[in-house]
Image (cartoon, rainbow, N blue to C red):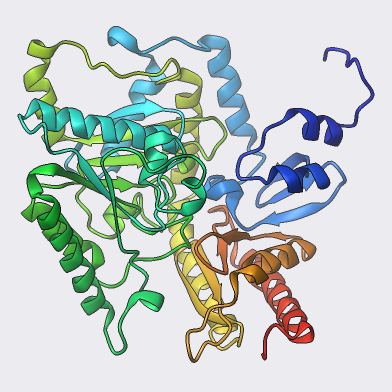
Length: 467
């Protein structure tokens, strides 16, 4: 390691030199960064020796858990053999070819090819560009608008950030830009009318989408993008029949579906993908996170046969695809992804997500359904959330200034648990590694219960909540 020219601590160097995502400059300048040093299983340890149970799998991504020597060895061996070569102009490499074949075979039957990048954001940039390209090639140059959903998260680059339906990612960035529309959030708890069933709510949302497309002109609407289970917007499972009803509308108007599988893919829901879990037949899929369990950066855009056929037909006439990144199809990332998928398959982590996820969902409801601070406990398999309300009988929200969700997240940290305060409400989210055991789930729920009780007591003592 090169010698330093000053005597600053790591914390001080971080505060002076590092620009952190999703972090307040002012808070970071006043606080102390947590420097993570090691990880094993579902636990991480920081530079001060504090061990934390990671109830969020990093950012929904460390599916196989931390500290896998097999992954390190695969990365090392590939880096020794071929650390890099590009995939432009028909160049390729063996781990990438095997990965592409494997991913396509895992995907819904109508999917045909994969374009590899580095992040979920760039996967959705690629999907959007390919959708526009596809419509141009089939003689529909006006068909460009993409409908996303309020609270949906699809990335933080310029266009993926525009697709995202969260104000934090728009404010002060002059976003959204481009041909983007936002439909209503599919959240039954807050959005349904009194007495409305989930199926009726789904039909209402589909009718609203149909009306939006008719108003804009079907000849101008290219796609509908959605996460099978909404992630960062609050971990929102779709209401009953939602994707069935939405697909009817999209097919009616020749609107392509982009399934954002960045969170749901590779076992999180107990299925290969959210699309298979909810019988979605997309034209484009975005994958990342669980593809390599974040041991190396890699993402992908999976494209349907319908789209590929049009591009193939026109390619002799129009020439090369004018899209690419230097690190697309990186051989080390592909090697990591293949080994990660080996582990998921060999250890049946998809099955564990289904079985242990069922236990997790049962415990969430058992412990929190009747808690006076909790309006809704929700989730699917190893995705879960608690939403906190001031009055659960009257569905009354807390004043946002109280930051109840953030307070519960901070209280969880005191209990040695990482659970994430989510945007879009007072929400605590969970997405633990897929290696979690039922006993570890029980421990996670117990820590959460102590944290929720502590915040409830604090709110009563301060006079901010009647309890």
